[in-house]
Length: 69
Image 1 (cartoon, rainbow, N blue to C red):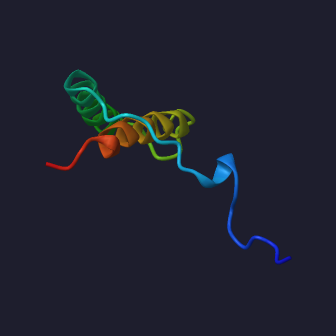
Image 2 (cartoon, helix red, strand yellow; image 1 turned 135 degrees about the vertical axis):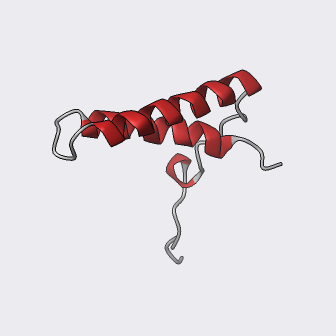
């Protein structure tokens, strides 16, 4: 019997979530704008940059889940 070449099981399937509601989408877009302006204001080596970039990625993930119109 040959061994499976691809990923199998739960880790093979994407974590599929429902599309965000319009309110969630609007809030995420506002948060992205706020975080981008904050990142522009603080120095690149500042310790909080890592935290703000992580928050930016989560907000961008919400926008990415939205259906393309």
